[in-house]
View 1 (cartoon, rainbow, N blue to C red):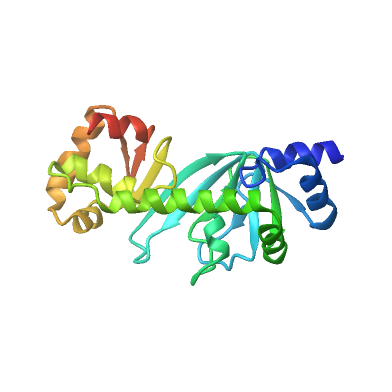
View 2: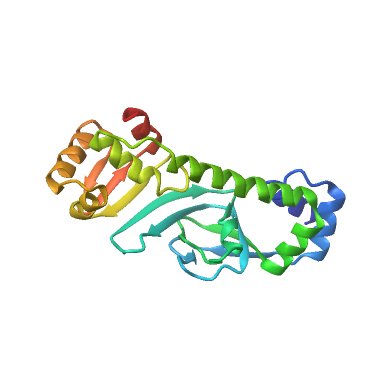
Length: 225
């Protein structure tokens, strides 16, 4: 059991680099809660208070993010292992900004905030790992703000999607009306329709009723770079 816990923790980014003695001490002093979720069960909801650090140990999740004006929702998928929104545990808004739903049988490890604080204060490697994680996210978000504005409408649509995703690759689905997308892009609906239909003709996206399916965002970015 102890060896299994070692292997579990070492797969998680925030615990990588810790020595055997440190891991042993953490295992002996920190309470780890393991929860299994079945397909379609919600693990955490957008705007829900975050008082646990959640790790995805096994399975796949659908991540859904709703805009503040409720005009669109973006969904994407993530695979184990990984950490779910470490930044939501602290700051002026300690709440989840996405809804996480099990796409398959899923195992989640949760650690209470007080226990996370203890690990953070006690182990330098853990501090460095979590600081690197947060710093990388801040850097990526800041770089997006300084991108040159796109001229072609197709590129504007791609940029709109890129600024909303967690990971800039893989399958994404944007649920939005064409008139709402046109309003966000400050263009006409007819031009949005033409651009989307051309992107579908090129094989980059698939259009459904009030939905834009992107099979592989990295390919869409490459085609419109």
